[in-house]
Image (cartoon, rainbow, N blue to C red; front, side):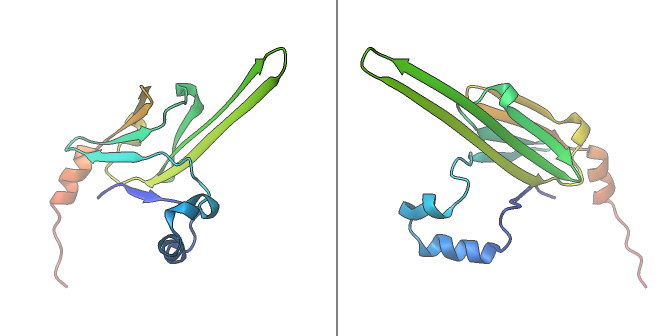
Length: 145
């Protein structure tokens, strides 16, 4: 089994793909809802799935990682406000960023042992595999009827 990306906002994937193909990248911001969506690398080893989420500008307490009903939900929210005052002007800026990603977890992931670490703008999530499930799944006898 493998880790599958799932986006609950896309109800008709065929239509979205057609729209993506029809309109150029110049109009991407007008048509796509989540332009802050971070890139995610998924690596699989014998012992675990390793996810790397490129999310610079966040703090580790901005992230929320949940496992529920066989799904892994990675979300983050951050807000910042800066103000510069000079004798002739005042400049105030707000920054708000958020994202939400869902993944369907394979049956062989030990959800109670998932570990996450954030450093240098990369959120690293380790999803350890349950080796007993793999062994049981690899030896299966099928009865002939």
